[in-house]
Length: 244
Length: 194
Image (tube, rainbow over all chains, first blue to last red; front, side):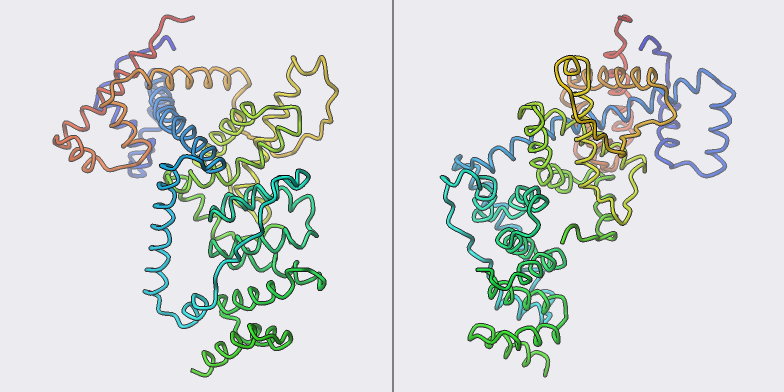
């Protein structure tokens, strides 16, 4: 970079305005014809553009390292202080979620909130080395780091899409992050396997997900086909909601 | 099963990436890292290598989103794109001279290319890359105030009005300060040609 021609503040701000699309159409056209006819000007524009782009990259780079360090903290999660930081973050998110829930005052949301509680997860057996990644994700899941759990399980799902335990917990993690539409396909996939340990749980959560998705009839039908005490309670609540 | 498509959500995500929304960048980064790490580890790489490749890919994706080179289609989510770029970058490393001598690789090259500047020649791309590295390095040598101001304006997209109140100066002096910071940055990059 041997150039370093003078660029006045006025010229600089003009170029900047052009690059950020702040000029009117006629002004921009004039600007562009000057780029074509004035080589030195064209160089200046290119230089300013390079600088502005690089400044953004320079600002982003240290942030990426921060994000990366958070990743390490989250996975090992030993630092008490950091734990508090995340707990605080989690409670803020929870508070926002609650505010959102209650300001919405949607009866379906209320029903969902009453009957939904996240699946507590499986005991993590660290000796099961062959399933290390799954249990590693389960650790995150149980700590409430659902996004992280999802990210750890995602590659496993691609390897074993038919695994019902995996699809069940993918569904659970999506529900816990309030991504109902993402959760449903996984729950369906668990339910496909009628012998699954998680079969009845998956039915229950699917019904809740359907409530949230405003598909009350589907939820009623589903629960009707799978009678149990727990399902009956939910079924009654949905029927009552529908009558109102 | 597989990916549930959510185009509306994708465009929201892309909008947020464009304006450098920190929460979005953070979760995009943390949610997708492990997939790349796994891939690199399974293909003769190490964790630090995975981190480097992923960060490089992340910046490429972020740039491409900004210039509108990534448009979400039915089957191409941003997350998938990020992984493809990481994968391609890692394959490039494996294919590079040091590796080629010793290993025979499966060259299942993917057809998603980063396409950073299709019009540029390889050489131009190289020069641009070098220039950018120089500026990025110079940026870290700037004074704290300049760094903060430039970051607030160019990265956080804060208004000059906000920035001027942050620095407790008038808007006009904030603009002038910004200009002088850029000038300083240009001086710092104005090294004798190597």
